[in-house]
Length: 130
Image (cartoon, rainbow, N blue to C red):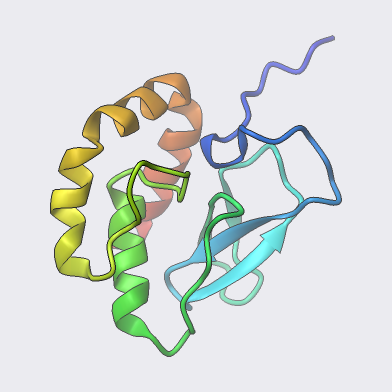
């Protein structure tokens, strides 16, 4: 029987490999963990038990003490960005996120349309964090 689950949008580009982990970010405890999961867009954080969101390998987590940068990362994820390669660098500050999100809104809309189950998991997890 074929697997009917879609690959989470943050992990779609590379072929499956359990030896190639992806980062999952927890905004509650401001930590990132590498996981081999290719199925779930959201996994429990091993540190606090809260939701951790699957991102691309391009994601470089800020230091856990850098609350401003973690707020920026969370804002980007809330706008639907999972750290894909884009035509411009990601914003440096939280204040730059809205304009950046507006410039790339059609790209994110396509990703959401192509991966509705994964984004539903992400949106549900982020609603727990508010």
